[in-house]
Every structure is written in structure tokens, then in C-alpha cells.
Image (cartoon, rainbow, N blue to C red; front, side, top):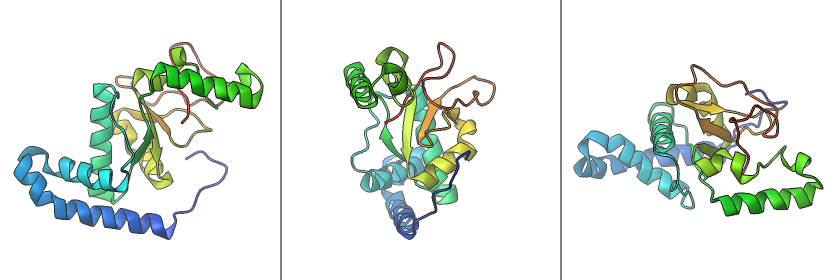
Length: 189
């Protein structure tokens, strides 16, 4: 990842990943009984729900949800990496409140746009933005996300990815949300 410093893996994060993978393995027979064709995906979903209980996938666009589900299933089963969602779809009113709070905190709309976009420009409101955790999961997604049309968009946000199908490769990364062409928008948690 293009960052000035790399956040080191914490031992507890490796432990969480190992425990979640073991839990998914134990859940696999029940998942197979429930849905044989999607057993690994379902066991992964159940295990990750236990690891990230506050996660909310509702409101994501169908393509974004399918891509995210496929990516994190592959990350867990093939590489032992956890990918959780801290923020996906946002209601326009929530997004406006976040933008207004950032304007008050930073002192101007221009400065606020470096971190949060207004609802009309936010990919979270469109249901195609994913703010992920932990850092290692984001690193995995940055390396493998193109297979799922999931791309990191901003230099200042290691956690923010967007579903961009048919883009013919990764979109040009921008320094922060307030920079870019019309039609390419997103923001942070």
C-alpha cells in the first residue's frame, strides 16, 4: 500500500484470524447441510458475523455485496485473512450529518471534503463503497481486490474501497475524496 508507514500486524490480529478460520472449519458441515453449493461462503459468513457482530451489509448494491462476499470468502479460506466491514451503505441524511460535522470541525467545506463528501457525491450513499478492517484485510484487498472489481480509491484512506465493475483496470487513485472528476466520488467512515 502506498503509505508513509506500514502498520505492523499485531499478535492478537493473527490470533483472531486463526480462531475465525477454525470456527469456519467447524461450521462447514452445518453450512454444507444448509446450502451445499455455497457451504464455504456460508461458513465464512457465519464465522465473520461472530468476529464482527456490529457489521451491517444491508443497503449495499447487489454487485458490491456479491463482490465483497466473494473476496472475503477467498481471503479467509485461501489466505487466512479477515476482512470486516466498518461502513458500507449510508443513508443520505447520515452522510449529510457526517459532512456537516466535518465542516464544523475543520472550519470549511473545502477542508471537510478532504475526508467526507456530501451525499450527492458519496459512493457510500450509492451502496458501492466499503470501509474495511483490519489493516491486514485491507492490504489483502488492495492486492487481490481487482479480481472482484474492488479498488482502493484514496491515498489517505487505506480502508476505503469501491466496487467499480467494467472499469478496465484500477481507477486512478486520488490523494483524498475532495479531488477528482465528476462522477467519481466517495468518502471515509
